[in-house]
Image 1 (cartoon, helix red, strand yellow):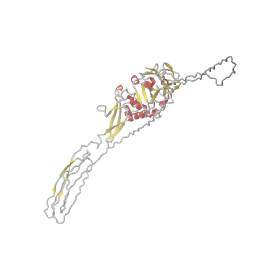
Image 2: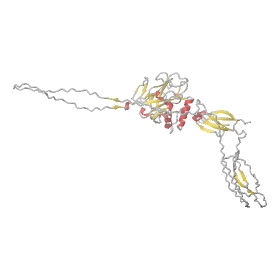
Image 3: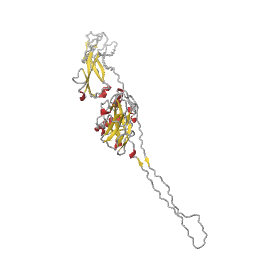
Image 4: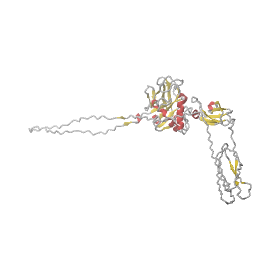
Length: 485
């Protein structure tokens, strides 16, 4: 009867803030080995890294330094059942093979005892493998001739063995030859051993990989140009007609038909029409809402993995924003190229182009399109309505600011955040300050992304922008720039 093996699998969260939280699960199987997929739910907020043990948490783990996105996708481990009969690991045993050669007695000569010349060929042959031996025998029978027997026996027989599994081959088999005819018997023993034993381990956990389709987003950049064209008003020039004074001589008055006219011709003035561009270029801030459901996080995490990102797999998969390391810019450039930002998929319901607002270029303070106060180099109010998201899940909102839109430099920018009407600050109070290190780090966005190419600064506010604060969301979320620093 098959032996049942019960094995405990432990997943240990090595995050120092979690005090090595451990999850235990017991599995049973009767085969010699069994493959299992170990994964955690995407709803878990565990950040990792993780270690996977079997049997106990002492000793060396089966897998270590497993990231959250890798554990959400699933990690394969193989369990063995050493108690099952037939599952023991065999030890290879070399077995020599003796090939006998018989020498017959020619006719007319007193019979002599057969002479056996054994040739030892050391052969390591795998267990449970039948090694065929094909020995071609050529027999030449001369007529009326007594010919001594010459037996050629090759002694250097090489038997290639490529399988590390021992085989017990019976040896010392003597086959007597009762032939009175002299026989020249060359013995060519070819022992090919080409045994391939594949190991097939079934895995009963299918993994469905969704490969997202990357659809480039083309965002037109509109630059209004004001052209000032002067109005030319024609000038009336008076005509000076000379007066002819007659003398005392009566002379008939003759008025010439062509009266000379002294006309002042105005000098044409070259008009320069200036193009007012720099002060009227429209720059936009963009908000990227990343959903926290299983399908969405798996989709974007798989996309980031397929694109060979180095450390960032999305806000929820990485349990927070990326670190400001050497791959920060390249990882975020891949992130903003994800197709879900332009084409709805899973719970990415609305394109990023719907979550934008202009950045004020004029000095001093004014008001945005919703009547809220807007300072220079800050973006106006951006509403996220309940029809643009799934109100039953969390979203994380990152804010992307083009560096040219804030005068070419940015240390940080405080934010106003709240629910209800425009200008609300029910969440931010007097203003929320994003991560200063990341706000000061450049991100180079290449063409084909969900936002125009260029250099950006990304504002990360951590848990403050994990919204809604309570599920479901029931009103519009408002986000606005407050003050650039």
